[in-house]
Image (cartoon, rainbow, N blue to C red; front, side, top):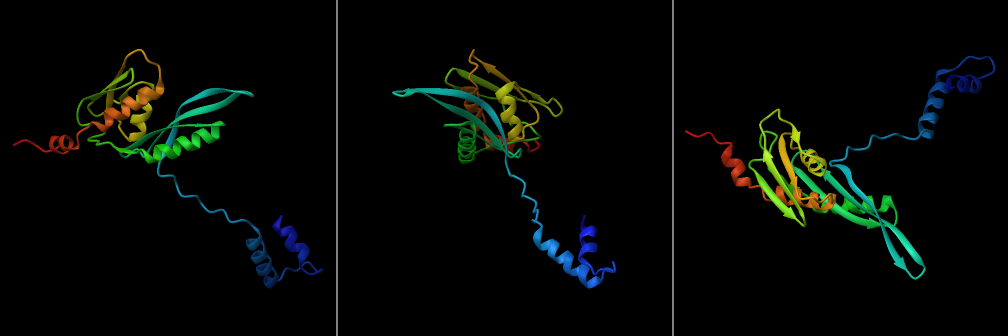
Length: 193
């Protein structure tokens, strides 16, 4: 394509002069858009739950959406955000922004948590137990997503209670991770003499 244009732009004899080639390549470079590589996002995000909401007004029902987003950097920071919006994109964008504001720091030792912990939020109760290296994520649904984005690779968990509410399970998991003791994390890594 470019060679054909160069040939047509050169003189009639078909000889391409180097000055014309340089001029033409400069023109092409100026006209083409520059594709700059975008910087990689610091946090990964995952949509945990998307629910349709309905408000009854005088003119009829107003449909909206509620999004639950989890973000994390896989290096010990994780957050959960919940937001409503008129459409899915608006709800997801708001929830992601709120999750970034609510980040917590999780102490991680040898790809697991320092000690067993449990927490309750609403009717959801979550128990998190540390596991040895190589055991993997023995966790279901909500807990698995949060632990993955936090950077925990070996953990065992149990969601107690009959609730299938992903939002309450997520909040209970975050509450449990907040209760982890950093002092215990540093003292358990020291060797006993």
